[in-house]
Length: 377
Image 1 (cartoon, rainbow, N blue to C red):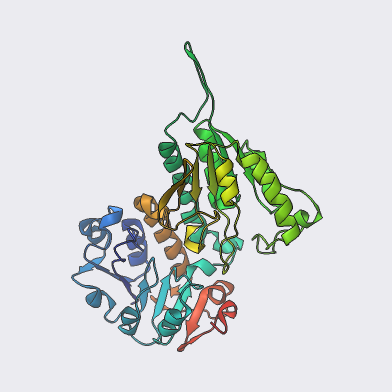
Image 2: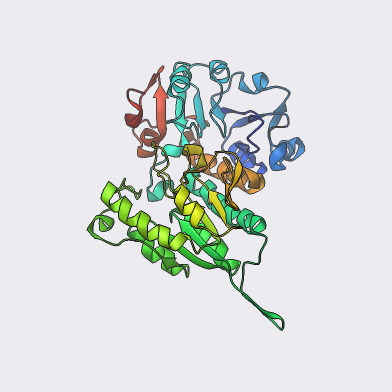
């Protein structure tokens, strides 16, 4: 029997790595699921609800970790937690693989195999395991809802006997998963929406959601996407042309939502101080790239600051603000991944180390970092 441990997350992380639904499915695979008491409380998954689906609720993290084959987490676990696992155990979490490399090295030395869900390959078979997409979807939605609340004006155009209320103008910078959800949400709220992205494929996606696409569409733009579907870093010349176009557009916007992140790099700077100063007082900027320094020059990660009447909101864990949904989706992502690691007939771990999904997400094994993108970390 495979023993799966789930422990409580730090105080600043309300999500949890299992839900009642996935506990039931894991037990169905023949697993023994041990959950630290209270671990699901901030996602409204009570101990009783988890116990009813077959989980064993234990008093402490140490009780959960003892004899566990797999540790499921949202955030990177502590070195002490990993050290408490038996040799060869698996750790599956969002490990923030590019952050604090010394701490990651220490974790790798704990003789557990570390899997980082952020590295999930963008292939059809792994879509149900894609935590970046599931969490970014919710972040894009929440960004618009929060911005609408902060804006303190109406979002849709309203025609009344006393006159017309104009529609709010929303500009979304970066049309990945979070950006597309932000566009769709702003459109549902009745805003006039425009968006930009350096990937040519985004133009059609933006248009399909009823938003206007804003970009310098030159030859470099046409080549600006990697085979994996990520944005490539652009030349200084292109960035200057795009910045000029954005600057002329942004000064007329009420709400700007930035979502541009490149894996392993600081967030690209999209909004300068001068652009902020060109915006109308009362305008809102939501910077979803705050965890990597932010897309706005004036962003202070984790804070809301005001400059010339423009508020810049830089949340670090927006998906966590919708913890019930975020945990439910994240838990399903983990279950889909674990299904590939467990032999359903023998009810034991059966990791195929040559599987593309396993190789893509494996960060460390046998005491050392093994992921190609982290060599030398």
